[in-house]
Image 1: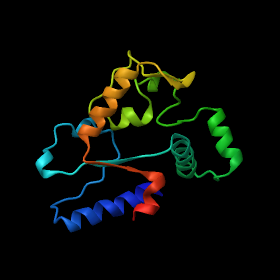
Image 2 (image 1 turned 180 degrees about the vertical axis):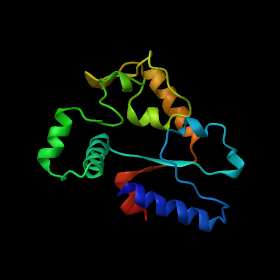
Image 3 (image 1 turned 60 degrees about the vertical axis):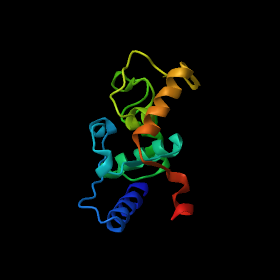
Length: 154
């Protein structure tokens, strides 16, 4: 799993650089926007959206003692059960940007200026704002990994 691989990487970086602590936080990065950059190294990972959705569904199944199989996965997706924090069209997850941008961005993003529409997920609604949000993410992090390329990188 990507999270356990990243936990190992986290520990290796901490040992290599004699860090006083090494924390792995599964939370949005807005809580870290005031970190001391001279005393910290902030990294995260991004993942292919389809693979991330599938992984999330399997995680939910395993945590509810359900067998991970095609039938249960399809049932959950058809019922729109907690698909990436919540199904993209639900009121709980109408962030302006979608799952990964909303999760990685250093501030809580407004819900009233969407970058995308769940009914047209392949179309960017506001390209200039989307580019600004990506730049803000890149400026906030020291490093961002691509999960699908981890095996090649280790």
